[in-house]
Image 1 (cartoon, one colour):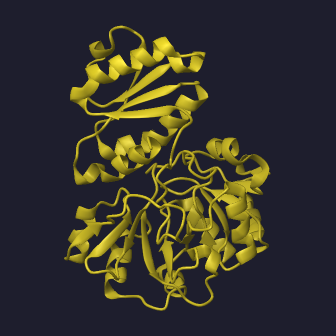
Image 2 (cartoon, helix red, strand yellow):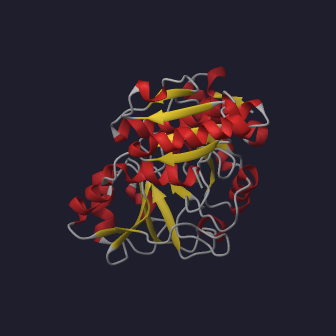
Image 3 (cartoon, helix red, strand yellow):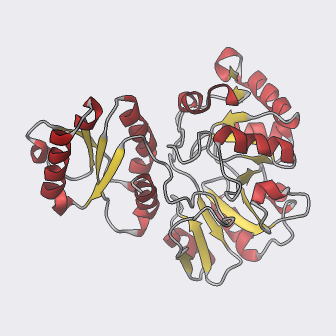
Amino acid sequence: MGSSSAVPVSDAIVRAASLLRSGGLVAFPTETVYGLGANALDAGAVARIYAAKGRPAWNPVIVHVASIDAARALVTEWPDDAQRLAEAFWPGPLTLVLPRSPNVPDIVTAGLGNVALRIPAHPMALELLRECGVPVAAPSANRFTAVSPTTAAHVIESLGDRVDMVLDGGPSDVGIESTVIDVLSTPAIVLRPGMVSRDHLQEVLGREVQYRSSAAADGLVSQPAPGQAARHYAPNSDVWLFQPDEISEVLSAASQRQLSGTNAAVTLVRAFSTSLRDDAFASGAVEVHRMPAVPELYARELYAALRSADTDGIGLLLIELPPAHDAWTAVHDRLTRAAH
């Protein structure tokens, strides 16, 4: 496995593009998280993604392209709403789900009739897509259900030699996966929330947008978008979610767990908080990790903080739920699945 640190970026991009064209796997940075990429038109290459991640066949992958024209070449229908959203948010953390063209392999879409498409807003990702000349299927570059990677080091920790090359583009700016929307539905449906919120989408479309009602995939049927597993984005630590006014009960329960623990890791408790006073944890039995009170900054830090808990051997995470506001919906979604 190589990395961009060994050669200049331009040479690394050329080498990575060649690997993609020849059926290889390349992990690369996007503004959301790092992706594990393969030629989306090569079913055998995409199958390597599923094998490397341990990803179930019912879970489709997002196809990354370098331009709107490249996206339109992969679908049979491009409605006005798709054009509006693409012009407003691409390159960026929004994925459009549209009817696929016949040249998109079944494995990319979990056998369904739609394909998920986006243009990433990361200069290295865009350079790679332009250089390789093929659409790139790329879910997050980690083992299935684990915390998504936001640095090249996270990718290497997760996948090791399962990937042929890792491009290092620094930490991801957004930090959680893209919003996924089905614009052909009436109303339009957000299949997976991200940092492009429903309010943002409704403002551009000028019509109602709803969140998908079903809570999680059951593993029995193919899903229209990734990120539907009940347990997903999850650290090794146990995760308890709580409201700020529940802190006394949560700390009491955590204390009981500590007293009854049979291994050292159980006694290590870390609390993620945006608003609680430090003296709420005056006993010193709980280490506080202060999270930003701004959704964009919270999302940027979330996965790195969850991974740090695993590295530090934390047995229990107490996570204060952020406000119930549309801007926080994507964070709520990731926390709920991490705690499942």
